[in-house]
Length: 190
Length: 325
Image 1 (tube, each protein chain N blue to C red):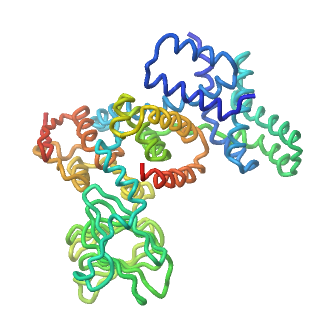
Image 2 (cartoon, helix red, strand yellow; image 1 turned 90 degrees about the vertical axis):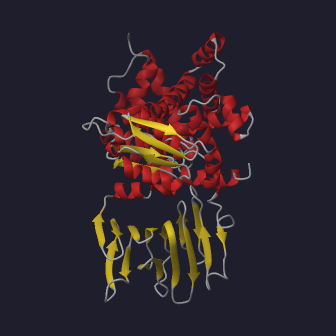
Image 3 (cartoon, chains in turn red, blue; image 1 turned 30 degrees about the vertical axis):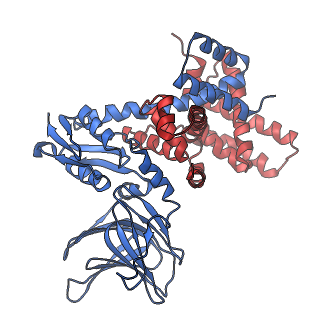
């Protein structure tokens, strides 16, 4: 059986997300912009890959990133010199942006356990019960004393935050944690 | 054009629905149709789905890894779980809010300062007026007095992590039995169980003074050092950042073990729970375990042990007895 595009995308593209985000973050301070651009880059990569898989996925990803940044800079009329300079630097970056080194089992477990720490308390509870303990939605709602719809809301949110934690730049982790704590406090009265 | 946020939200909702059900063929067909609609939908879905499956590996590893740890060459740790006693977590999360809950001033007993306590399984942050911050672990008690010449902390029992605000004129002194741990601006933890005092320094330098010796014995510890001492002796070890982080992982509400003898792991769990684990067979005490656990989720720990090791657990009302299988 040939590999699905989804599997290909997962294996060849997603491991570079941290490097991509790091690069984009230097240009756009706004996290939303960075995520939007990241998304647009992925859309172009996948569009192309569905027609024909690129031979060198990593360089392809960064070439797409480069083109998109140029387009966007033109559109937004941001012709900051450092932006263009950095685009040349991208060629170097491609070489540096190695995918995550193979983590040992121990590191993987630790990393995975850390992921859960990135989530706000209530959200983490829900995700953990679903993902690790396999507790049914109804039971989660009962245990936490919240509506089933709320359980789903937390799960949806958790799924999105996990993706940032799994693939995103590690430097953002701290902020997420702080955000999570702030929310813990806000949720205290629930 | 649809926003990236909106698309991701929909994709996550699909994954959540598929995960929790009910899920039937028509749902699958609707999802397929949604995916076929645009590349943007597929991108968002592939990405979130990959992360979701990745997170699920923790469950698989949790079971598999403890099992493999029994065979020495593959010494990987087990993944830990969230506690079953939900109430306690919320206490834990809420403890960030702090002082109001745990702090009780008992001025009549102690001529100075305030006393802070945590119950078994508790975790509390205590911000001090001088900008320092104390994190108090399970079953601990300490007294604080900020005087003009000394910031005096007395650790009655238990464990605390100190983030000390700089103030050269007022040293920050933690009294633990016959030991004094003295800092100016630094981060360290002190754990006391009667005469057994352990100090871990994560930043800066602290000085430890011991009263028992004549003259007073002093010892400097810098970042990365870990000291453990009885009434008169002291063992100092240099630890790696990873080891230090593991030792102090309780601050995040987790226990981290790494090639830890079962007896030690059990002793750790017992600090956090009133329902104690008892090892009845000395033959299993030395089994090495690893992993990250929520300290109050004893059940998960015991289940993983039973899964992966020749260990049998008998649950009684107030304790769990471990025997060899």
